[in-house]
Image (cartoon, rainbow, N blue to C red):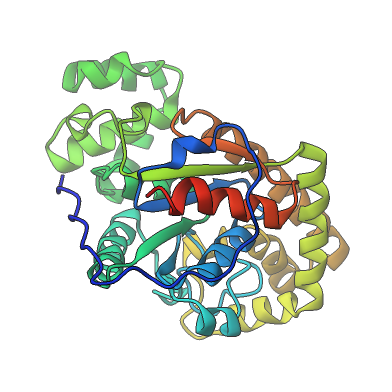
Length: 335
């Protein structure tokens, strides 16, 4: 693992724009002292709006997308990508890095993130990371070493129908990893064996991975909303995306000569609308499936982020100006 890039001091302090006076929000003092901030939470929680407000209010703040689908060119409406006007107004990074025909990897994202953050720091600026792809966030803030993929090895492993036999084999190859997972958890056992046999290294040698939450130089701010509010916002946003031409966007992507990668095809909303465009699924059914799928995804996101004790949670339903002022006070002014 590489050491974090050292901070580069600014020659002169940035000129601050006027902002609302803050009022008290419990817990946000934990954000103090960190140069960079990550705004996290479930989809449709208001992360992008807060991040954009932060960047608009302070000229030395740049935004870094932590979204596994915003990396794809042409996948704009369904990923809620910032508009061209917003990207012209405020610096955005890690958007439009690959064609949809490519399978973009976590490792590739880590490399792109390191380059982007290095450039932000070289300008003496501060980064606000924003997005809901939990694995990508952990990969960059904790500098995770991600094992490679070995499809041919995995195929041979999956040919074995007896999951307990696979676990016994893992016990022989990597007892530490085997002790961390149940024999019946076939997916994890297969992945561990794939890495052991494909890389020649034990799966456990890649570190504790997602099971540990080490200290980080990033302040982590989580936006929380009631489940019912999130569900309603998801449905409303999807309707807005449809009105903005989401179906036409999917139709154009499906017709592209290079096609769509497996990763791109699995994007929420795109998967269901592709079934409409390519297989004739009625649009109403596709929309219903998409909204239900995004709501399920939000529940998984909520569980994922709630496990991280480093995140400071705030009420995203409060007045946006008040929330902005508190974050500026407790993160920006104290960082």
